[in-house]
Every structure is written in C-alpha cells, then in structure tokens.
Length: 232
Image 1 (cartoon, rainbow, N blue to C red):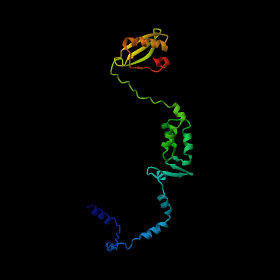
Image 2: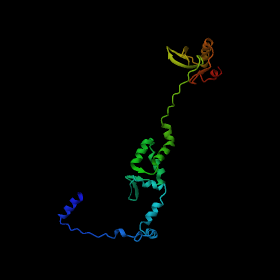
Image 3: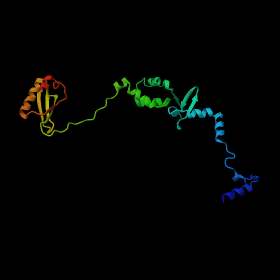
Image 4: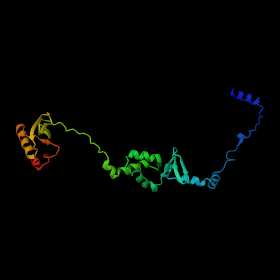
C-alpha cells in the first residue's frame, strides 16, 4: 500500500522516470571483475595512506593509550592536547610532578589540580608514588590509630592485676590496683611520693593480704619502669 501511494504521488508530480535494464546482473561470473589479492596489496603499498597504515600497525602497547575512543587528541601551536588538557612528554613528567607537589597538598587535591590542566598515561599512579615517598608529607600526615585490642579475661581472680596512679585528689596521689577478673579495686593513698620504693611497699602489703598474682600490667611510666620494680 505504501509503494502504491509513492507511485501515485510520482505520477501526478510530472517527474520523468528512467529505468536501466539489469537483466545480466545475475549472470556475473565470480571473480571476473574482482581485483586479485596481489593487485590490492601492490596498490595499497603505493597508496598515499601507506605511511599512516604502517604507523598504526607499529603502535606499541604504551603508545596505544593515547588513542582510546573516549580521548580527543588535538595539536595546537606545537602542543598536544587531550580535550583541553596539555599532554606532558615523558621527559618532563618528573619535573612537573615536583612543581605540582611543591605546596605539599594532599593526594586528592594534587590529583584534582593536575586533572584540570595536564595529562599523561598513569598520571594518578605517579602522583600517589611521589606523595608516598615525600618525607615532609610523612611528618605532618595524621597518625593512623591502631585498633583497640582489649585484654582477654583471665580464668581466675587475682591472676592478673592492673596498676596505675590517679589524682591528685584531696592533695594526694593514689595508687589503684584492679583485679582483671572481678574488677575489685584497691585505692592506696601515696601522699606526694610516688617513688618506686613507696610503690613497692604498698604492693607488698596488698600481696601479703591477697597473695601474689601471676602478672602485673602498667603503662611502663615512672616508677613502674624502674630497676627496683623490675626486680620486684
């Protein structure tokens, strides 16, 4: 029906129709009009595009990154551009990295600034490596907090005790001795003297009352790190 409407429209338009007889179309002999492979190869070799073809075939894996389908490479005033960013040659990458990191910005900010102006293959990896090796950045970088690991609960009371000083309260320092199993706590007034000898005297009195424990845990601050406490 559609073809009939077109024919009717042409008939009423006054357009002259011309036809070419194609009676011999199906009688073509295979290969009679085709170019032999040798002829095509010779013509390709002498073609003006031969240099371009050989150049494309010679592309290495490294150079192929410049020709991804999402990239638009242009040449302007002797400078290669990827979209609106300057493509940096390999010989200048290190020097440019040093300039990018001269203010010791963070990895994220350095990448953001670089992506706005320049490009070269594996640029993000280069930026990450130079910042990780930067001594100045390592000094001011926030220290990673280690995961909190609680002490395991002992099997028996008075098997492990934790000791530390608190205060001053009411004008005195206090020695706290806490049983890790029962959480029972001794609080001994130490006055203003928290020497190793005074601490040992208090611990001896408590151990005489409760018996010796298996392990004592402290923060290794004075006087717990003294030679007298080690011998005790």
